[in-house]
Image 1 (tube, rainbow, N blue to C red):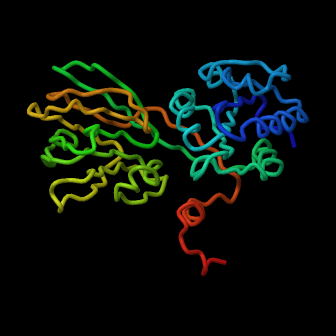
Image 2 (cartoon, one colour; image 1 turned 90 degrees about the vertical axis):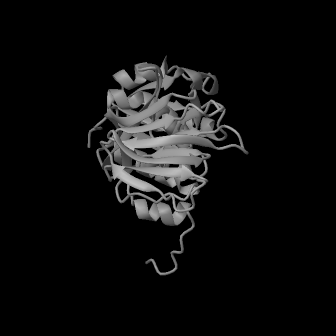
Image 3 (spheres, helix red, strand yellow; image 1 turned 45 degrees about the horizontal axis):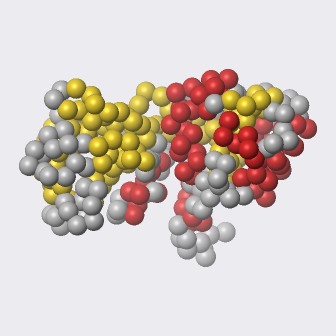
Length: 294
């Protein structure tokens, strides 16, 4: 069978333990198939003997037919925010801990990667969030997230007071450590630790999870994925709350600012080996009891 993908990009973090031998195995496998391979610039130091082309992540996203990300979910999250706009399919090889997104283990490379290259895979489309900080009617900061956007106090002992609106409809005024706005992809990450629900990745929905709210009756709310969510930081706050996207501090809001969150137009195309199961991943990664599962 001829390969479905001709130009393959290899992406990851050079500091990640165990990445180098996986990259070398992938290069050997791809070389046997005479595929064109381009390696992300920052991985070059791990492959000094390789004569593969080097390129930036944006260049790889624009030119490659398939991008293989080697590392943990954090590596894939970082790459996904760039690759989504090019709609380049992404396959993850796990060298991290949980691996909800990077679901091929190193000892499965020889079997599962060739199958994917031959067109035997399952495709998923994951949406991302766009977050912007609006001050006096003007956007002063912008970032995107595959997992979640978090507005928080930035300190361990202080709360912030904010007003939440969905599609310009007032929801509540809240005093809390912050608010997690999560996609279904991110529902098994920080949102889960904050008491949010696990959401199947095919859902077109967003969950709003208050962080240690002062009102004990406050609970996570699931809203339509096309909603525009506005978190208005009340002017009487003294804190300048950081706004993090996928765990990275991207922006800082001031009292009186609003953090406006909505779905991005581009989606991440994520590939899985045939037979991939979200529920099996949950059983494995979250240590659910599988004693009764055949």
